[in-house]
Length: 344
Image (cartoon, rainbow, N blue to C red):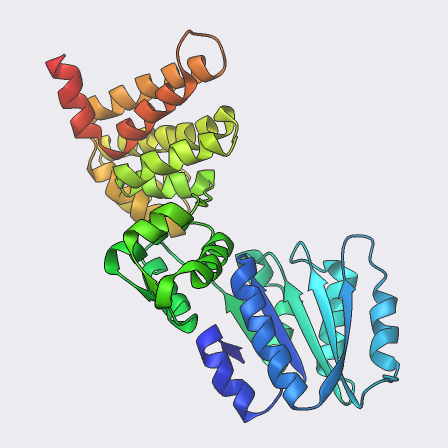
């Protein structure tokens, strides 16, 4: 059974399953799901808990022995298996599938994948856990969903935020839910009568936004320039190496140029994107970005990518992050860049 975190509460009320599989890349949301399962299990008499960290050197026979041994302290127990990489390996995968197929009596098997991708989701062991138990895949909160998540979280803390305060908090903590929760907890302690306005957030909240280069890529393709610029300089502040950012942006530039050349030859959009090596899941945003370009903007884009490459790698004088900014703009707002070039 596959359920969302919101559906999990209903499932837990119907009865504790012998196997739960919790997976995702957002630690805070994963911990919230785990807390719900543990709390419901404790209320149902699962008083003992044993945790196994299944890293690369883990001996899976220890888990088999742990499942076989009776608890000395409680009639019911929870056996947690944490997968730091999200992958148990061949031996571990077979072991988890075997234990899920024949669960030990009075034992709740809780498997936690702290990293999760499409390849893992398709693995036989993961499918088996979902089929024989309850699987909860935790998805990251998107920028569009963040205000809703924040609103629900502050309400649970008994806080009342003004619209401006909530918007400012979202701006500060975007990309880092753990920082968001910490800031909300702090505001709960200092807010007079639980009322939070924009000034209080401004005084209290440090900028905890955390981004990665792939968020930058997605945002640039979507032509969200203000957010793209914020992410770019967030990466700089966090000490991300400029060559890594260059690699991601240059990849988008060459992909767009390759697909544009195929379109110019008369190839349909879908085929052009496929031939340019664009994954099916990315063809929508890349295609929309491509529609904003023409021959002049593609030429300018390649020139900006070449210049950024030389500057970032030290082959030409210039400010690396300034060159990356120009490349961001060349990808996301091509016509604006061309107009500026022609008017100069």
